[in-house]
Length: 29
Image (cartoon, rainbow, N blue to C red):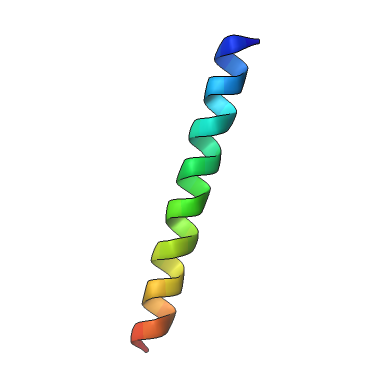
């Protein structure tokens, strides 16, 4: 369970980063 929670947290962080990168790319257009 610990590993799963850790994995979910990391996935959420990656998703957040990708969203911010995508937003930044959109803003530059």
